[in-house]
Image 1 (tube, rainbow over the protein chains, first blue to last red):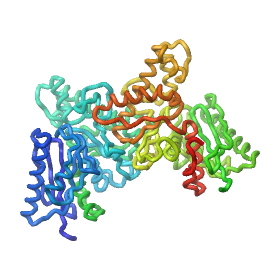
Image 2: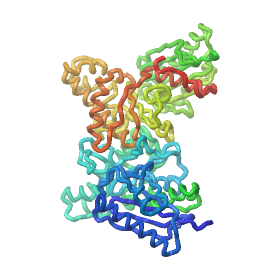
Image 3: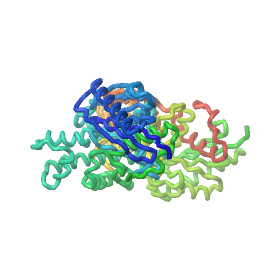
Image 4: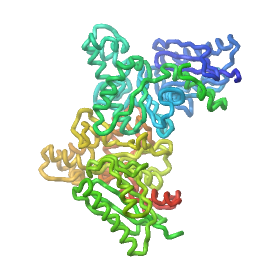
Amino acid sequence: MTDQVVLGIDVGGTSFKGAVIDETGRTLIAGSIATEGAQGEDAFAILERFVIGMMAQAAAQGLKPAACGLISPGMDERTGHVMFSSNLSWRDFPIGPRLTASLGLPVLPGHDVRTAGLAEAQLGAAKGFADSAMVMIGTGIAAALVTGGQAISGAAQMACELGHIPVYPGGEACACGQFGCLEAYASAASIARRYRAAGGKQALTAADIAMRLDSDPLAAKIWNEAVQALAISLVTVTLLLDPAVIVIGGGLAEADEVLLAPLRVALQQRLAWRAAPPIVRSELGSRGALLGAAILAFRSLGLANAASGWQSGG
Amino acid sequence: MTDQVVLGIDVGGTSFKGAVIDETGRTLIAGSIATEGAQGEDAFAILERFVIGMMAQAAAQGLKPAACGLISPGMDERTGHVMFSSNLSWRDFPIGPRLTASLGLPVLPGHDVRTAGLAEAQLGAAKGFADSAMVMIGTGIAAALVTGGQAISGAAQMACELGHIPVYPGGEACACGQFGCLEAYASAASIARRYRAAGGKQALTAADIAMRLDSDPLAAKIWNEAVQALAISLVTVTLLLDPAVIVIGGGLAEADEVLLAPLRVALQQRLAWRAAPPIVRSELGSRGALLGAAILAFRSLGLANAASGWQSGG
C-alpha cells in the first residue's frame, strides 16, 4: 500500500463538498461550504477558495493529493465544462480547466450523478448488475443509466436527464423552461414549493413533509403526487431500458420506505404486462458522489481497480 | 464469392414476410402472407406453412438457405420465444425452437425492431453514429436504441418498448392494458381508430388520413395529436439517451415530410434548453427488417461482416 491520496470535489446546487480519500477508500478529511445563492463568477470564486482550502488542510496534515476528481451536474466529461446549471447560473462554464490552472494538478471531470452511479455500481446497491438505473432526487433529479455494463452518456454527453422528461405534458412550469417535467413535481425543492403553493401554512422541507403524512392531508397529497410523478418516469425507464434494479439516492432517499414502499406499488400498478424491477435505496448515500470522484481520480493515476477492495459501509 | 444464401423471416402483427438473400445483400426470392386475424396456434400454423413454402421455392431454383434469421416483435433473442404479442395472442411462444425443428436448419431469433435498427445502423440512416434511436411506427410502435455503439436490450431483453411509455398518464386505453401509452395515440392503427371514434365518416387508414390534412379538419386534428404524442416520447428519448440522430421507420414513415416536418417542430418546441437531434426517415424502409434478419443469419455462419459491402439502395 502506498500513501497516495486524491481530492474529490462535489459541486452541488446549494453546497460544495470535498474529501481527501486514500487508496483504501477511507475519507481522511472532509469539508463543505454552502453557496448561499451565489451564481456565475461569484459561485466559482467560492468553489476555488474552498478547493484551495481543502488542499491547504491536506498539506497541514502532510498529505499531497495527486489528482482531483471534480463532479458537477451538467458536466461535459470530455471538456470539464459545466454545460448548464440553473442553480448556479452556469452555461458552458469551464470549471475543470480553471481549477486545473488554480491547483496545478490533474482535474478529472465527472457528471455528478453518473459518477455517483459509477460508485454505486462498483460498491453499492447496483453492484453486479449489467443493467441498472440510479435515480438521484435532491435539489434536482437526474439518473445514472447503465446498459450492458456501460454507462449511458449520449452523443453530446447530455443523456440521463431524467428530471426533465415530461411526466405531465403541458403541466406545471419547471425552472428549466419546459412544462410538466418530473423535477417540477418530485424534486425535494418542488415538493416543498408545491406544499407552500397549495396553502401549506408552514415553510416545510420535503423531509418535514415526509414526516407528517399521517397527520397532514395536504402533506399526504403533495407527497403522493411526487410519488406518482416518479412512478410515471420509472415506467418509462423500465420500458425503455429494462433495468435489473432501480436504485434511489439523493436527499429524498432518506425518507426510505416512506418513499420507496408507495413508489413500488405505483410503479407496478402502472405496468400492465410486465413485472416492475426492484426499487432499492442507495447503499452509499451522499458519500457516493465523492467516492465516485475519488475513483475517477485514482483511475487517472493508473489505479483502474482502486475501488475493488473498498467497502460500501467504510 | 460463394453462393451461400440465407432465409429471412419477418413475423409482423398482420402479415408474415420472407426473403432469400445472398451474400451480396441481393433479395433473390421474396414473399408474404396475411395473417387475416389468426391467433395462437392458428397463427403459428400459417407461419410454419409459409416458411416451408419459402424453402420449397428456394429449392425449386436450386438454392439451399444455410440459416434462417427469424424476427418478431417481443422476441427474446436468447431463447427464440416470443414473450408477448397482442396481435397474434402469443405469450412465451417458442417460435424459434419450433421452426428449428420444422426446418432442420439453424434459426437465429431477432427482435424485429432491434434487427431493423441493426440493419439501419450498418447500412442506412444511422450508419456511422454510435448513439441513435430508430422508431418504427406501424401496427404498433417500438424502438431500436443504440448507445455507445451498443444496442440496448435490457436485463430481460425487454427494453426499447417505446410504444408503451406513458405520454399522457391516465389517458386513453391502450390494447396492452395500460393507459396513455404512445401507441394509443400514434400508431397507424390508433390514428385510424381515433379518427373513426371522433366521428370520421369513412373508414380511413392512417395513410389516407395523412393525405387529407388540408381538406379535413378532423384528419388534421387526429394527425396533430399523433405528432404531439410522438414528440413527447422523443423529448424523453432525447433527454434520457441523447441520440445523434432519430430515424423514423415503419409504415407511417411513408407519410415522409407530412409526418417528419411537424414532428421536428414539435420536438424542438418541447425542448427548452437543448437542440433537438435531427429526425430523418429510414433509408431501408420496410426492407430493413429482412435485411437485418439476413445479417443475423450470415453472422451465424461466421460471416460477421457480411453486410459491410451491401448497398442501402440495393
